[in-house]
Length: 66
Length: 189
Image (cartoon, rainbow over all chains, first blue to last red; front, side, top):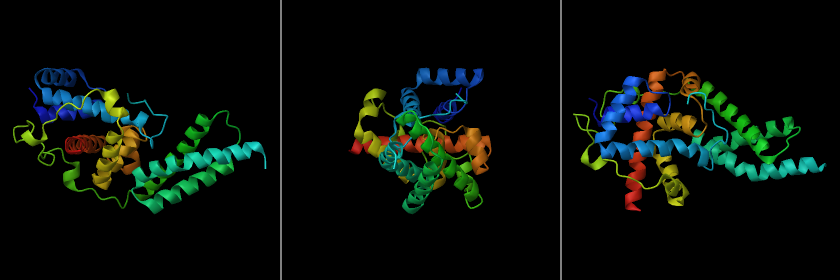
């Protein structure tokens, strides 16, 4: 079972590459029990979304690793 | 002077502040940002031919700027020095976590509300910029290359001579520190 620190590592990794089955399962299980990490996961998603909205960001984004 | 040239100049006048803001977030130095934007605009004026729409032109000029920034990073990478603890996944990330891997009480994330509303909020964007500026240069550079320039981790690693694993550790650290900084600013504002 993973703890919050490892869960945040997987949430971050998820923004940069696809998680494998084991990683997904571990993260999903942790998030089902941890409200703080669920909030953190949404914030990481938000930080990933800034690229399309930031006034100084490029409009065209590379999605080759999504 | 043709009307086409005039409209290019108008486009450039409106585009310039956006280019400078973008370069500044990447380079974190006013003079360097002004220089690289100047250089970009000279290249754009030399090469511009036919652009059907404004957004195609913007995307094209931003593309030139992005390449110039990347060239500069490639050139500078020999001067970039990484502290071992910036690349290591072993510590507690500035005490955000307890020894057992759970959140420290003071660092526990709390919900920010609906993402769409947060992204509409000007205070959020001010906080984000402030928090990006507070991040150490190296870490901010990797984060903005990923999330503002939209580069893949492979592209970032190649430009900065880092391993994939290094990149992921740095991005993890950047996201944790940014969310912590934003949340603390959010609560006190």
